[in-house]
Amino acid sequence: MEDRSQWAERIIDQIADAVVVADRSGVIVRWNDASAVLFGFTAEEALGQSLDLIIPEHLRASHWRGFESAMTKGAMKLQGRPTLTRALHKGGRKLYVEMTFAIVKGEAEGEMLGSVAVARDVTERVERERAARAS
Image (cartoon, rainbow, N blue to C red; front, side):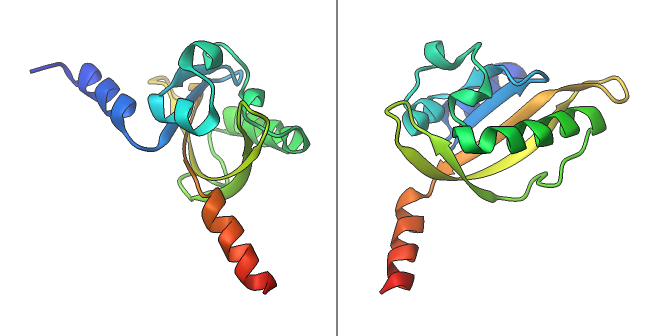
């Protein structure tokens, strides 16, 4: 039987939702296959890049305020709660994504290693709901 870390890596690689892990400075360090499908960037293109890669420009300032606060305080308002937000696809189109966020903590007290986000595309659902309300 494989060790637990290998098993965990297989799960992340094979899960249907996008999993994006960033270090404490906001640099992407893990990008699963579903992230490539959702956002259009291969792992090779995304790894080592800033999270700005998938954050629309008009949301970046508020994202980074929240991110810095989370890395400093070790807590976030959105911890574990699904949140509807916008994201960028490599092709330039804006997506509606539902995301959950968590802080990745180290073993030492107060040590923040980075963050993880789990995302799924809900663009069709949001557009369908808006069209229904408009009619």
